[in-house]
Length: 151
Length: 370
Image 1: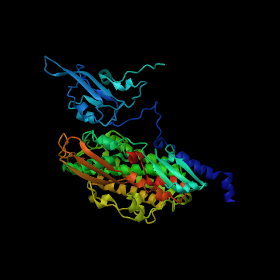
Image 2: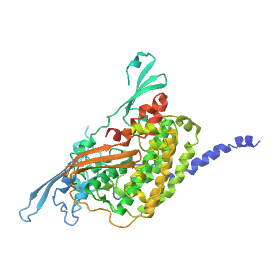
Image 3: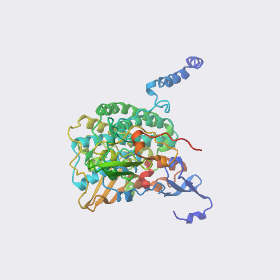
Image 4: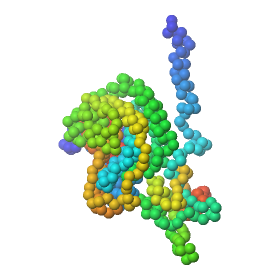
């Protein structure tokens, strides 16, 4: 009799559904709605590189010491500079960073004595071309420019 | 594999892999079958060979550190620890106590994360789909701690030669403690799903038996060896990084079959939680970096350090010629050695057991091929 009543009132079904709905609490949802909802990466996340500039006068913080290029295991950083005759210091001319070969180990960031080169929390590095993966100085300072799609 | 048996027309040669999902990567197993019965196997490896040991010879000591993470990418922290310990032994420095405690916490968290990947994928191979979601849910918590600590989730590059680069972040201890509190009930949850499950036991019991003597013959280490009843754990046998301070047990079983290896790994996860709890409780204050010169130039010599990675004994043999670059780095990967016992374990079994045995060996092809 009890068995029959259980069957009629679908007790087992509701017990099962209760387990399902218990796990529907937003706290238990692990899926991120990616493009709509940005994942919050950690503060120390090693993502896209950035060459910091002094916010007051817009000059680069880089002193062209070449330590990042020496620290890089892949040798993907190329720094060129020319000597300034007046200040007797090296002025940065070009700075290229090949993100296609970068493994984001963070050794360049550690090597930098003036905190000019930094790996940021930006993680979207996809481009349409291979050349687009090689970041030049302007791109490193201002962030990547959106690449127009060519047919 | 002897060719003579090919005369028997009932035998069939079948390629399993390199794209087969249950070979856990790019492993190709050539199976010689008599009906459903496996008469012999031979493994073809090297599809993921990247020449890591050769790369080491063209990098400086510190520069090679991120590459070791890419061997066993499921347990990258353990790889980094082994390499750092080997170079530290060459240099004659030791990491400060605080660095050692943090290292222990992270490697044990990584052991849990690695075992969770193993449990999820192994259960998936056998046919249980639920555990993989449960396991990855908890693994996420461990990976979040890695991400907050060192900025990467998988290829962490967490340790540096001589200690640590990063000081622990705010709330590190709280989060680790919360993980320790949260995790053991979750292990109960997995065990509830699997341990007494008749299908699970039926698929695993007396499958891929490897006795203690055979384990020693093949040089198999890790949970595979312990499931055969040998109480051998490098954390107890040759303590490194302050493991002698922590109180934990070495779980062992007697039969050495796939089910026992499952039980051993489940218990190991619980022991790992115990170690983390003790380490985070008595975490000393102090510096995190030992006295290491800026340019690492170890004296001429060689050193071998082996650690207990989640998969077994992970050894690094490093040779220095006194320059800034290693003369030779040789890695003794646990997965590669354990894989050699595959033929012994599956011979005479069924094709479905091959999948179970590959799963239970817990191989990572990045480490097998290097």
